Amino acid sequence: MKSKQIKKHVRKRYSRFAKENTGCCSSCGPCGSDAGEQTKAIGYSAEEIEQIPQESVKGLGCGNPTALADLNEGETILDLGAGAGIDVFLAANKVGPKGLVIGVDMTEDMVEKSKQTADKYGYKNVEFRLGEIENLPVEDGTVDVIISNCVINLSPDKPRTFQEAYRVLKPGGRILISDLVTEGELPDEIRRDFDAWAECIAGAMEKNAYKKTIEQAGFQDVRIVSQNTFHEPGLAENLKGKITSVQIKAWK
Ligand SMILES: C[S@@+](CC[C@H](N)C(=O)[O-])C[C@H]1O[C@@H](n2cnc3c(N)ncnc32)[C@H](O)[C@@H]1O
Picture 1 (cartoon, rainbow, N blue to C red):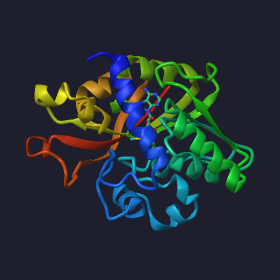
Picture 2 (picture 1 turned 90 degrees about the horizontal axis):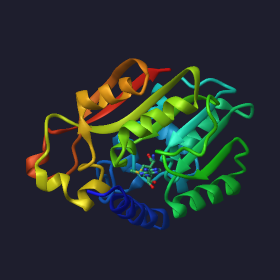
Picture 3 (picture 1 turned 180 degrees about the vertical axis):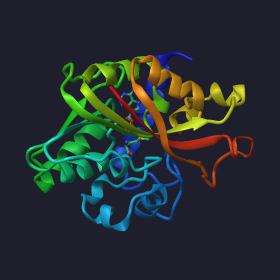
């Protein structure tokens, strides 16, 4: 499958979600009754959801990276595939006015929406940039922590994405990635399906290969800090038990 076509499908899908009030039952996350419920099902607490603009809560993730990233005041954070900004706003609250959180996303409507939300609520320590995670619009060695939530599975070039993450991190910097991976191989017809790719399934890598890709980019101490089997009511029978949601930490 060609990278260009994959990205076209992915952009189309997330452009639609940027304009809708909910991503429920049509996203990468498990389906709840609404975006808030769906977001709780992914692993966010009610308190966390209350602290951030509701416009950013769309239930599109598959984990809660800021909860595990040990963010400190004053740090510079980069969110790969920030979507409507849920993790950017949570991180912004943690790093405070001396910190900075940059969200990168390749879907123009998502970036526009996030910028409007930041302006509406007066967030001064966030920046949303249009760009691809395979070619990050970020300078070398400038970021303390990279987070990402259910995005790297959508990338047609995962080695390049992790190389870029390594490039922009400061020495000693860390990543905390929430993503979907597979247990074993997926059926070929799923791998070739653009919709399944945009739904975060077809592009998911086998778990050990994913860890190895991170190591090969130069990261050290690559660890799965938590994992659970991904359940979604709409998940096809032949995929049940084969998709795992992982939270992975590693260091530069
Ligand atoms: C499943 S959503 C997750 C959004 C957000 N991280 C969250 O948890 O709500 C995936 C997002 O990643 C973006 N995305 C997918 N592939 C990308 C790429 N190669 N480069 C930049 N952004 C990408 C999409 O536009 C979309 O906004």
